[in-house]
Length: 449
Ligand code: ADP
Image (cartoon, rainbow, N blue to C red; front, side):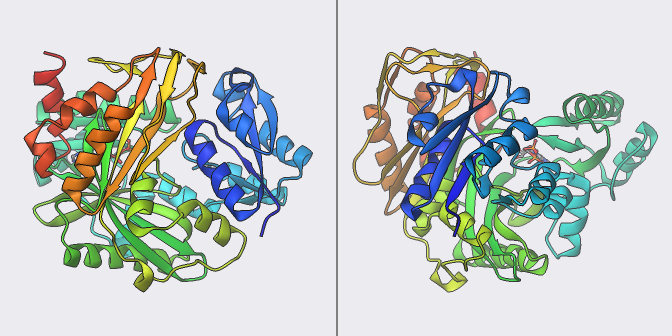
C-alpha cells in the first residue's frame, strides 16, 4: 500500500479522497491555488502545497506544478478526482515517466474512451449496444446530409472530443444540418482543440442510465448496477438516483453483465462509468467516463462499498475487496447537486458563506467543502455540495431528502436548493416518471416563465 497520496483536485472531491486515505492509514497531500489557501481540503489534508495562481490552467491543470509537488512531498501516487486532469492521458504518461502511480486507468484506456468515435467503435466490438449513426467521423456537410437521408431526422452532431454538453448540436431536418454541423465542429475546435464530429440518431424521450463498472486490471471486472441521471439541465446532471426507477433486476443483470465482460476483456483497472440512453427497453451506449463520477455516492450507498478505497487498493496492486456475487443492492439512494447558482438562470453566484449547517441523521450524507465564513472563489465549478440520502426504498429516500433539505442551511449566496424543494412537489418526480428532457421542459414553464 502507498504511504502517501497526493490529491490533484479541490472542493468536495478532494475531501472525499482525503477521508478514504485517512481510513486506510495513508498520508494525504493537498494541492491548492493561491485562491484556495483557506479551502477545507487544505485544512483537512496531512500536508498542503501551493501549486500556482487562481487560474486552473496555471494550478490544478499544471502538470509540471503537480509533478513537482509530488516530488517535494514524496507522494507515491496521485488521485485525480473528477474533472481537471482526471481524463488526461498525457498526464498519466508523464506520471509513469516519473515513477508516480496514477490512481485510475491506463493512459491507453483514457485515450480510447476520451475520443468518442474510438470509444464507440471499441464498445461496439466488445458487444455493447450503441446509438445508430455514422461509422466513425463525418468530414463534410454533404456526407452529413446523405446520412440524414439514410437514417432520418432528428440527428445529433457530436464533437468526438466533446464533454460537459459542449460540442453537441441537434439537427431536426436537412435545413438545420449545415448550421448544426458547423457549430458542433467549431465548438469542438474551440473547446477541445479537435473539430472532428460524428452523427447519431437523436432519441426523443430516453432516460440517461449509466452503469458503474470496476476492474482489477488483471481480467476481473464487476458492475455495480445503474444510476438514473436523466434529470439534466443543458446536458448537466442535477439529480441522480440508484437504482433506476425504470430498471428491473433482469435488465440490470443483463446490461451489467455486458459492461463487466467488456471491461474484463480489455483488462480495465479501477472505476469507470459506461453511459447509455435507455428508450423502449433498449440501451444505447453514448460514452464512457474513465474516472470516479460526481454521483458515485448513490452507488456506494446502495451497495455499501467505498469506491475510492477500492480505487486506491487496485492502484496499489491489492485485490478488489468484492466479487460480483457480493454486490447486492440494499434500498434506494438519491443525490442532489447543490450549486452556488442564482435561479432562474443558474448564473454562477460565488461569494461569502455567512452561515452553513449540514443536515444529518439516519441515511443522510453531505459531501461538501463549505464552512461558516468560507468565500467561494469565482474561478472554479459552481458545485459546492452534494446531498445524498439513502432509504429502504424510493419513497423513504424521497421523504428523507425532503427532511434533509429542510435542515440544510447555506446562507450568503444563492443556491440550487429551492429547485429541489420545488421538484419534490412534482408528481413525476415522486413516481420516477421522467426522461432526459423533463427538467428543461419543467423549468421553461415553471421557473423561467
Ligand atoms: P457529454 O460528454 O458532453 O456529457 P454525452 O455524449 O455524455 O456528452 O451526452 C450528454 C447528454 O446529451 C446525454 O445525457 C443526453 O441527455 C444527451 N444526448 C447525447 N446523445 C444523445 C442522442 N443520441 N439523442 C438524444 N440525446 C442525447
